[in-house]
Length: 449
Image (cartoon, rainbow, N blue to C red; front, side):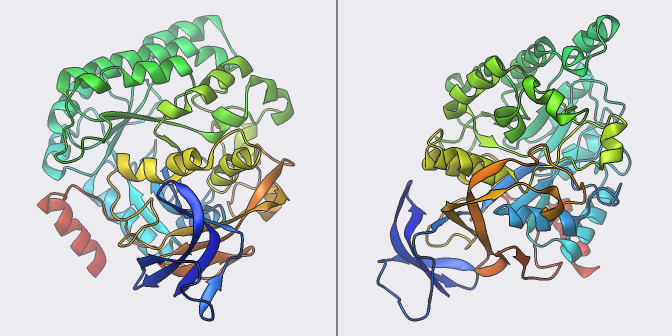
């Protein structure tokens, strides 16, 4: 396959080129006129690396009525996302055991449209299992969310010592003591889950990470002050991974809704605005935008809930299909540079989560591409989105630029509003450093099943 455009994102900039694709990977980057007759000619459309969303809640197998791996991955590719990672669930099965992980892998391998991966859940009781299994990434909470993933200080210490220090430990940071005090004074969600609760927890986890000299990834930060606190110590600690001096030791993500929404939008959202961590004041949103050069990636925190669930107080927004379009809308509006958008959507998550052969357009990399027309526009209409949620916090917004197509391993998986491949086309994403022997056995067994 050959694809050419006057604007392919290569080595940090858009330039005319023709890509040759062989067995799912980019074989070469050639001059624009290299192949004319047999090339897919994208004209002036931008060809960008496929987006990577490291923070989604696809709801299967725990609550497939809300989402499943097919509808969630369809929403992903329709938004230019070629790889997603699913978080452990708050409730059983919460991906805290080998069986839970194997079950999710089997389901996704038969149902997902695009590449997929899973973060393992840390509990106060499973540090010995984590030490033996050594999954690629781990997730825990600092506050009591009524799930097994809530870790005490001692629980974090056990996992920080047991889990490979080179691999990312993902932390949802909100201080339990502060939340308890806030619950006695406030009823509003945004005041209970206060900026102070987030910032205090970020500082404590940063201090613990530096004590154990390990990788930590801070999920969905909402404050510029939290980003600064999360990154303290990066320049003082030598890289843990050999030959990768550029790899950050402490990484963080922000969500589109914390960049594009604020507490000013709560009235418009009519009771649907509850999310953890909460929306912040417009002044804090402006500060967060200024911190983007220090933020490693944008992740959707895709949390599909039905309107009925939202009316009952379920926190979270659907967002995997609108994540990349919102960032690229900012590019078209000259609020964000294209190289920054690609870093936040593609190369940043690929680097931080050691995702092999993805996040970049270069020979040897997987041919995971997003075709984007900056001259087009579209209106967000939940009835046309692929998620089962059936609503969007951006309903009615007109976004400049449009994702026209998504290519995965050289195959068109989405084009002009249509899904072009069957469920099961997606594959378990490959990550490095190499996984332990138990995990290899699990994957082999999963494939055989």
